Amino acid sequence: MSESAPIQPPRFGLIDANAFYCSAERVFDPSLRCKPTVVLGNGDGCCIALSPEAKALGLKIGTPIFQVPDEIRKQVQVRSANFALYGDISARIYEILAALFPQVERYSIDENFVDVEGLPDPVALCLEARERILRWVGIPCCVGLGSTRVLSKAGNKIAKTRSKRVVNAGALAVFHATPENIDQLEVEDVWGVGRRFAERLGREGVRTAADLARLPADHVRARYGVVLARTQTELRGIPCGDLELEEPDRKEIVVSRTFGRDVVDPMDALATFATVACEKMRGRDLTAGALWVWLDGNPFKGQGFHVSRAVPFPFPTRDTGEVLRAVRFLAKAMMRKGHHYKRGGVGLTDLVRTDHRHADLFFGPDERKERGMDVLDKINAKYGRGTMGLGASGWRVGGAQPGERRVGSKDAQWRPTLKALSPSYTTRWDQLLRVQ
Image (cartoon, rainbow, N blue to C red; front, top):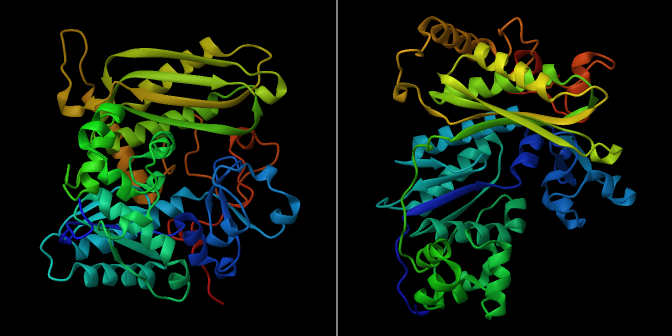
């Protein structure tokens, strides 16, 4: 690869929201704009998102909020993670892109790959997409273009690094990721490299993405494996894959939480997790062949234990009632008198497609119950999660809401601590923003 290599026309674009969680909070709370803002993960424990102003104060992703010095903590606006809000805004961004581009891959909650191959002016179209997202949804984005997915990722990273000032001024720069500018991208920022590979490459004098692209291909494959070899190939402008327009079937679905406080009886929490997991499973038209339940103690109080149990189902099921009965059976087998629990979870494993199950002489699908689950899901989809459920489960899956927890209530004991949760501005009628 030489620096005089011709610029290849872009095939892929990556449209990535800037500080997505913080930007989503700022859409409905203008008082957060231009102020250091952090979003905390479940339980208000660690920083999972930082605004540029917060990063300028030296804060890092993953830092526990209690470790932030008081002089910095006083300058920072803190919000609890509102995943329902972020998911809804992400869906709106996807709809905008789907109307502009022939194909869109939803890569993550804040990133979307788009197909720009053969478009007369992909830069102009990406700029139009960015402007629509900013105008219609309120989320600032950066765009990277390239002949491969890795190059489009690299272009997006360069755009973000260079355009902090420009985005603040209301403009956007779109960079073509080519050999001429990927030498400005550190190798650890290349998609697919990671910290450990970056350390090993650094010992060989590989500092930038261009350095990696120049290494002999046989050397990379022999020392680092096929994954990094594919990354290097894409850095050279040769695609190793296309857009993934359909999410591959999952092998398991897990729902777990750290409890707001230590609890003696986590049965209600586990029932809630099981109900949510079953709803997600049916939404993907899957069935569970086995169940996994676990509970953890609080190591900071001398109970650093972990207990787990698993059980197979006689026939792959999509019935919440059957899963709940198994959850109670396993939980009772695990719970011990005098133990307090700080975290728990439920996993549905050995997932198979509903139409791929094979009945035998003794076990088969209970069509009546499965039709009942379909009706249940339709009601909850129309009127909101938690509108209807199984009466014996004792669950409340409507999602945490600001001011909802009642001190001393049984439900409040295991609900994650969310002291700075914003309202569900876009998913609940009673929490729509009021303009006075």
